[in-house]
Length: 220
Image 1 (spheres, rainbow, N blue to C red):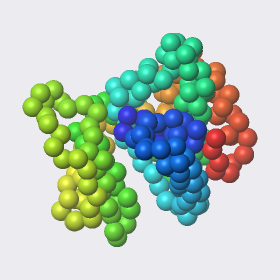
Image 2: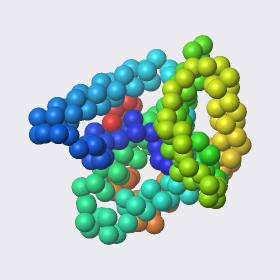
Image 3: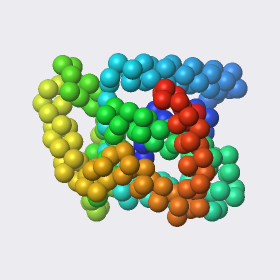
Image 4: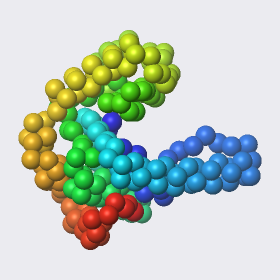
């Protein structure tokens, strides 16, 4: 991905994402309330899964992460949309808090290069792994003929699962060693330095300190 998992987004930030236009106000209101309910349930299920020992690994392209932070934390953005900037800071505080509290359950790997695919493997080390490919790639390796004909799919076919597991192995090989080692202190230092470029390191530390007052898993 180009950022931590959307699981850590404050719901208000998630709801700011663009949605297709609905035919009338009732439909729009229904969609909004349904999305709110789904986000709440997803968060509860995720915390429950953490309590059961389920692990979440995210592979993040270094260049893509820089682009994401620049888009949301640049001075112009801070001035024009301060509320959104604040929510993005809380978003990263959420992700960092779990990495620090449960480093064996939440790991963020920063990669030197962008992976070719953007995908997710559920139950990756279990008996029924499933691939979800949302049909979008951040970068295309300068492939000017890429038409992105494949829109999206979900599958548990073994040969496709194995193919994407090989892609994970390539992601692991591209992980920045200095950030992978001494985890989670290394990812904390890396993100703090990244936020410092936008004058947002103090705000990140402040929000993180609120979450770190207790060892329990909870998010903004």
